[in-house]
Amino acid sequence: MSSNLSRCHSCRVENGCFMVYDRNNYMGNQYFMRRGDYPDYMRNFGMSDCIKSCHMIPMHRGNYKMRIYERENFGGQMHEMMDDCDSIMGRYRMSDCQSCNVMDGHWLMYEQNHFRGRMMYMRPGECKNFSSGIGMGGMRGMRFMSMRRIMDSWY
Image (cartoon, helix red, strand yellow):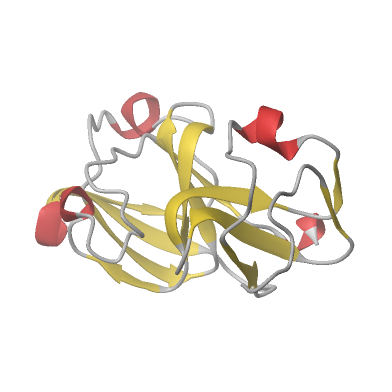
């Protein structure tokens, strides 16, 4: 993302959904933005004074399906999700999620129950080891406790 702005204190999303990052090359903390005004996103998100990189999330219409696993490399308990889950402990008695396979749709995974805390965008594909941070934009060691679908009604 190239810009002549050294600081940005507000933004407006006119169409679509975006993930914005506080570091270059889609690294660091991730923030989800959908259509609307963000007059003071720094305070709302706890973000630094600039967006270093961003990408649009493609619209998905159809089914949503993701398998979550208790251990890395798809080990331990496995549960298949097709809708939002505000607590994997409450729903599945799972204390941790260390890998996943997104088969359909686009998802946000949160480090705390009830869709709170830091988040990570997941698109179709496999993530074998969350604790290693590989493929996670430098977010090593995050634990995910709730998951939400990015629905077409958000666009």
